[in-house]
Image (tube, rainbow, N blue to C red; front, side, top):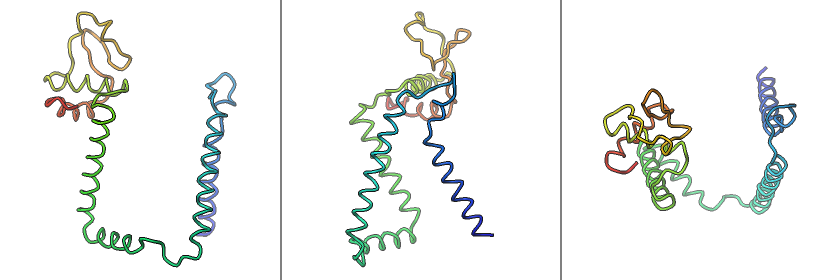
Length: 176
């Protein structure tokens, strides 16, 4: 019975993976279409070929190697993690934070780029000012956005309050 469960799980996973790559939207008459499907499929196919080719080369080069280079380092890291998982988690989280902050400052100049980010920063600044909404500005046509709502003389973001609330902490010190 266990073998049957494993086979059924493998078949279901394979079926879902295959269905994920089919252009079903293009096959529905009158529905949405993906006009660039052939380009996307070609890129996926060539990328998959490169990965499989690299895997084949690495397999051929390492088939007679008893131990891969760095096996002691991996073993020591695994033992260290087993002894202090919280310390490892804290170091990884801190390293990720430093990396993300560096990317945000050096590459994106610390500015929101996407309309979602801009709308959330606007809401964060509203929260940082101590308000939940802001009155509509004198010239709303210069302030309008599809993600910033203007209802009953009040302006606010369409997003849930959680992310803008976190951003409001940074907005208080000018570092959204």
